[in-house]
Amino acid sequence: MNHSVTWLLAGSLLAPTFAVAHPDPAQFDQSAFIEAPETVDCTLDNGTEAQCYQVTVGYLPDDLEIGPFCPATLDDAGGIWEWTGENAGLYRVDGDFLRMLDELGYRFFDDEGNVYSVDNATERPTVDHACINVSADESVEITMLLPVDPIKADTPSDLGTVSKVGVALDGVPIFSDAPEIQVTGHMPALDTCGGHIDPGGWYHWHSTATDIETTFAEENVAADCALAQDPSAQFGYAFDGFAIYGSAEADGAAPTDLDACNGHVGPVAGGEEVYHYHASKKFPTLPACLVGVQAQNNFSTTATAGVGATRAGEDGRNEPPRPGDGAPGAMPPGFEQAAETLGVSAEALLEAMEAAGGPSADLAEVAAALGLDEEALRAAMPARP
Image 1: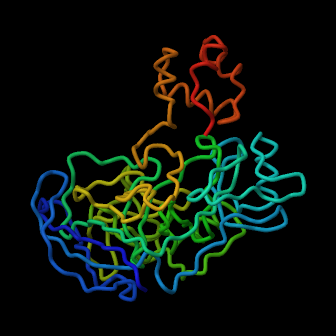
Image 2 (image 1 turned 60 degrees about the horizontal axis):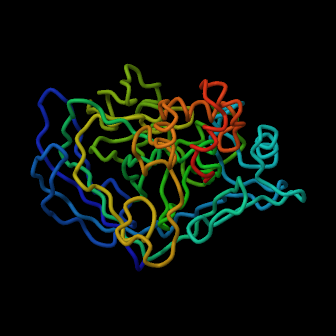
């Protein structure tokens, strides 16, 4: 492994009434590390000066096999996707799923059954709806911050689209939901373990990969993940320093008394009772919010596109349109300006668009739903992504 990801662990004090387990670098897959952890200074979001462990891992673990993502034809099976429109649910990306989307107005294939597929990092889609296969960039380095002694925040922080969640024990970054087809028009398919490659060229998880087959069983999806599955195992750490486990307790029982972030104080391996998050059985499986204080600047990359990019545009990789790079409730580009022009809220405009078919919505229907003049709506709307 010649290229690297840098991971940083930030330390601080915790209120004595909140039981915590401290992140332990020894729990991570040591083969993911290029350099042993070292102590550095860092600052938390609440201004606390802290100590950090700095560790270096690769852009993709050497032994991690990824894919498939997009199928080549309707006769093939690719990865998985959570569809949030009519007939919502988690699906295998195959002919049955793509034909269903076609019936709903989202055509991802040509008349011969070839699936429209594009590397969104190096080219732009030429069709309204394409499956996204992003190429890897092995030169990428990533820096992440994770509190060693977590602090509970005054209020939880919500996780929106493509929000930074944490880091898995295999060194792979964890992110929240990918953008919906109804928002971007396209589908950045996940593989059957719940991950894909960011436009910056590095792989990341959008699901609890070591417990994803529980979700397949719950949602009746015919897929398998090559990773070892254990619903009670720890998957990783959130960026606030609290551990993320699968959908079961250490004894196999279903967790109880979970908060809004799907976490609680309860026993973990070894019997200690500490605060930790659990995966959900249904997709999306990751916490919807984080209860703790994160480190400042806790995610940056040397990539030239994508989340955390510090050299944007230097090598010609695209930064595809997406909602806000992780801002909760972020809107597609131009929606807020269009809504202001029309005198409606951006949320109401987006909701009406999604109800009428997403990017291919019938604008007459949208105008009627919002009580707007159709021509005024057409004039104000941003160009289709």
